[in-house]
Length: 415
Image 1 (cartoon, rainbow, N blue to C red):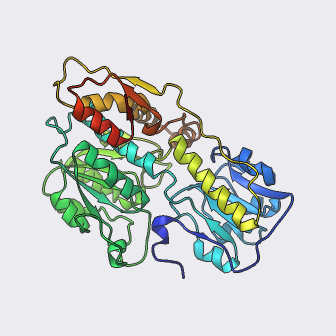
Image 2: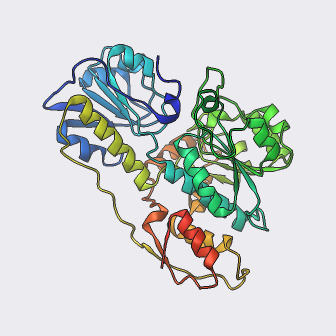
Image 3: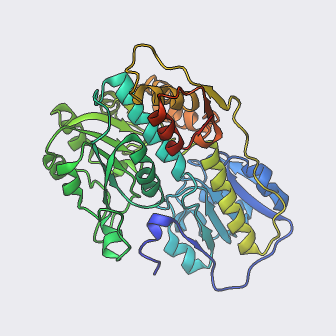
């Protein structure tokens, strides 16, 4: 059996058999793995495929030695039985689409990309919260003193917990599997989901999808969770859509228990219930982790695991592009309080990542018969999005000391 914490961190294992070496090799690579063809073609022939359309017959007939996927491809016996595949890599942090026990039983090596896009998701969280504050009137008094509940304390949850205090947020953590495993608790300890419901102003979900065990995450946010809320909350989900009970969520929004809703994931995606989408303040097509650094980190991690598994010397590497406009000239609005920071932070963050654009792009297709196709196309054609660390803010006034400090804590450079 695998490590019970594998689902949080991703798995990287090799079977207890000698490493293989094929020259040339044949590799099946998801067309949405950035630089996948460029990196893996150094080791043989690469055939790319649409992640939702790959068939077992295509895998068998290709004779592929390795299969590189993203989260939309279910990898199990139904896909791989009778194939030549000896290594599977997923350029994602989630692994619920991979039957790891089947891979182990068949002696097929496997690697996920744990933590590859954790920083990207944390920055999406910041962009969403600032957008809601400035554009939707969330917490007019600011974030200081508000309590954030983080559900799931894996690589992503840790990054969100690290970045949230820069906005003045107090953080509470819920992760029953980690707590049961005796993992060193975060500052303040672990809390139950219902404790978060009773104490938090904002709750953000960063769990994988698990359907069995002592603490399944499937529909964990259901009627009892919303009944436990002591005040209207801001709810965000950047983990797995199936962690939410859709009907209960819609009811909670209509009842005013969820004041603001931001969703990057949905039950049954790429199909999205338009009634849920219309009720959300922000929606996006499962791209919270889609910074260019996050995506290329995933390619790098499975590339390294692939080489290790087959005993190959690395012949190529991903290329990380630089920002086109890395300098942000600080320009505060004269209408803002001279000592406030949230509006100014929003302007800097929007220079890097305009989350409102992602919302508008997806919202335009809500209720359309070809919505699922549009959902996937938005993911496939997603523009380059950089992370905060690639940008320098200049011209911050001396009186904005707190502003400069927050920018640095968020990852920007300040001159």
